[in-house]
Image (cartoon, rainbow, N blue to C red; front, top):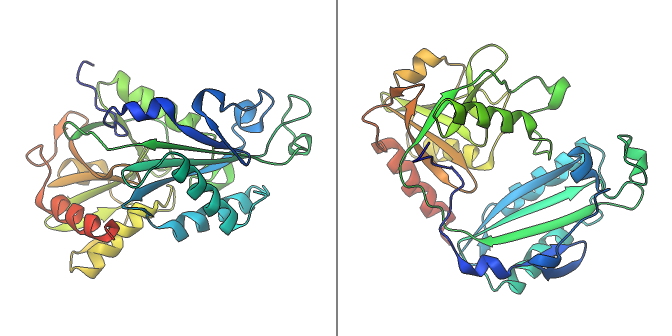
Length: 299
């Protein structure tokens, strides 16, 4: 598709060619930032991660990100090897090495580390975790509202792979994204196990109907930090908001739709399964929430 829109598209920045990256306690040039082919993350997707945004010298919602990182690590029985202060210090060291003050995005990754043999059992990871921080100069570049296509890939039950985990194992979401692209869309709209509208392959999903904001119950999706901030902003500013089950029929008839995520904040949606949403442009409720969110992240 000639005009494909990627929700994580950003302005080209030549400074990203000479980045410094944090790898296991060392800050090294991008070309030297490597991990072993025996690493658990590379071999099995065995790890957790966080994406963080830097605005005017401050990591937005840092405490919430650290809460989620350490909770996820505990859930998969992974010892990060650093306490919260140590992780934050690593972020700051990487930021300083790249002379970043704003419009930067960090991907903080922790895997179970290098394995002694190329097999699944976690006991084979005996050398401690691998921690990598990739930090890029990053200004979102969304040329137009995104188009979504509903796909057959579901966000499933906690006893298969809990969708609340920010894990390195993203193949289900990648397959969903591929299916959407094959259908001529930018990103996939994924349903839950009951057929209700849930999330996209990379972002949380909201609709607006008659001035009220709707999103899924959160039972089968990553409970995103930006998602929660939007819900909080609605409640604090007298915008009706509902976490509820709703169908594609409700979605096609929405006045507005938008995505939320750490990278793009609030991204408008123009079309779902070939149906135009509202007038196909960013609606007034989305615009208001964007302004409220911008004020929230600006020191």
